[in-house]
Length: 576
Ligand code: AGP
Image (cartoon, rainbow, N blue to C red; front, side, top):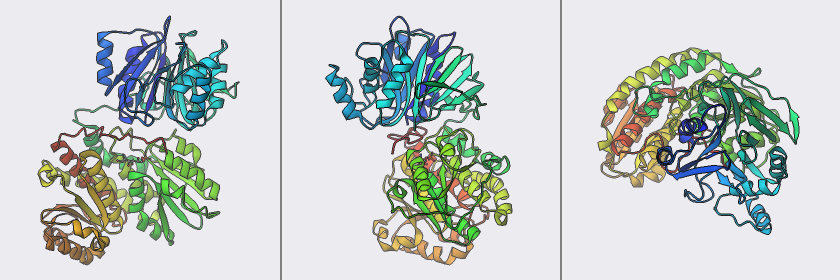
């Protein structure tokens, strides 16, 4: 949710930090700040977007070859300058940026108060800076080891020490942190924020601390130096650019045919990947859950068994029924969603074999699970996922096995056609007056309906309900009145009769029905329709969701919303 960048090298660190923060801005964008080492540590902070931080730096430039920066998504404390990172220790010796949650913040605040230090912010992060100065006796690595041993919760830390103005210190526990090597040494919570010249990275493991100099890094575990494996980065630094599109969301929508094609042809998977075991549970959050749900019929057909689909946050607190011999597939575009990672750990405790489906190879989820299958969507910058969803459906199609291979191979071409059909949705904002919008479907179309509603809510802020078409009459139909927009998704010819009935029920109450379908019969029954190419009904969400994404985009555009960075949201939700 928040983002960390650090740089030490033979050039001014400030532009590197600002460019890195811009690349990280999609992860959190309430406030941002940097700290630059020198005779003393200088911090510059600003509420709002990176552009306001840049303005401050233009007005009062700061220069230095070593620094850290942070972009924040507020959890503890409002987005104010006081709560913005980097936080300084009271003696000015340490500056700290932090991602994660310090769970024993209250106890630690009491401890530093006993030492006569009064915290200035409402954050759980500030305490780390004060602890470092209390634990310091001349060696910053030792101080960091002592301090992290006091912390409970999750953290990725970047630290400057005024006594060593060329060095950055780092620590990691359940929150991602990478070291990058190129012309200088870089620290970041996300590979996409590293400068382009970074050609090797080290993925820090839980419990490790590190010292970064301009020539490289030394990694420690429990105070002892350990080996530090360098690997080639899977995403090139700052690869993502708008390439002429007005928004990343639109660009990423158009990248879907290629992203699906890459996912199904360039396999990036562990050694044992496949469906196995005596039972199957699919787990995810948000769109990843919706992708899983849309593929339940597919996987039930493939395994011949009923398949459970669970929200990660709910699975964690469900009954701890032993599941030895069963398999759990955890879906996460980012591979860093805290609920999903906790669910993977919980699944392993219950005895499930765990398989990650994620878009980020070097992610916490791939390391947490027994095995992995990577989608190859490329970096996804828009907070609202598009290609993340469709490549997950394609990956589940791969898992379903040879019976579906030809249908899976058709997906890129069908996605292309759905993109063309969606062009008809330009300038459709006029349909919506802010009242509730319904998305309904059955089977795979129900997963797509949930995803369509989520897309509209998150970027347009219009209330939207995704509903199983058969459920409408059990209560929600009371909300349908003259003009209520209802998006009816129907891609399964076996369900045409039932779908016609649902559409008629809505129209009788005055609802305005927009069909998303490959059936001319359904289209004729709707007020208007987006025609999809015929698609396998169990993989159809990878295609039917595309007009729904476009609809949400056009509505949000018409309302003047901040499409790539909608309010209150963050790209990857790294707190439970
Ligand atoms: C999708 O548009 C959302 N931004 C959100 O629901 C997202 O899918 C969810 O937070 C899960 O993220 P993940 O796939 O990275 O785990």
